[in-house]
Image (cartoon, rainbow, N blue to C red):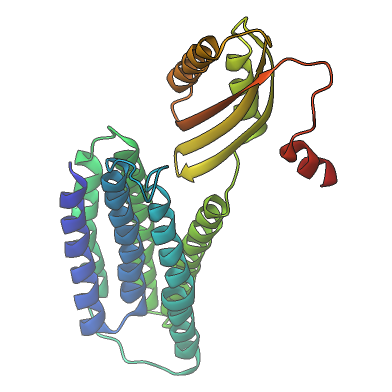
Length: 288
């Protein structure tokens, strides 16, 4: 199933929940509809990510446009925390102290809204990263939806449960927003991969007999699954420029073949000397 069709099913489910909220006044229905809305935003971000990923680098963005996706996710995360989650918590707490009037049949709206979500879950194919992410979100929505249905049934007897479930769902939305902010701000701040990635890069470069050593390897994320590597390799000082150029091409090709997330590689060639001057990178790292 394509993501665009999934968005239509989500819109249908959200509409039923909102209609149920307007008819019955149960906050759980409003909270669940907003919970689904956060998933829609995530899916829209995935669709945008697929479009951006296919857009080639240009003069203004020589390393691509991948970070635009992270900016969008960061904005969405802040919105989830400061607007949706906060407002639901505020309304949930207010209803604990002020009795509200409720209509009947809220659980029927809840069950009806689950049908398109359950349908989407069973027909969704897990082909790519986007589809796998969507499948995981659908599974979480099914569990959350059935829990909310039981919450509605319980709230018909004990009104305070409506507020309790609403605050709980608001906490889930707030946590999702927090994780979006945490992960995307890390990438936007120029996060670097773990030590295992660096070891793999060095191992591949040093597998060429012409390479004496590798130093000043700096890797930064230029998108969610795209990394730019800048590195220095030490070779025999007698090697010609043409030979060094061919060597860097071979190293880069092998690295791209063995490290899927590698998007860009810059390799600087250094002549082997007994007393090598300290690089700017080494001076900076030595002061930390």
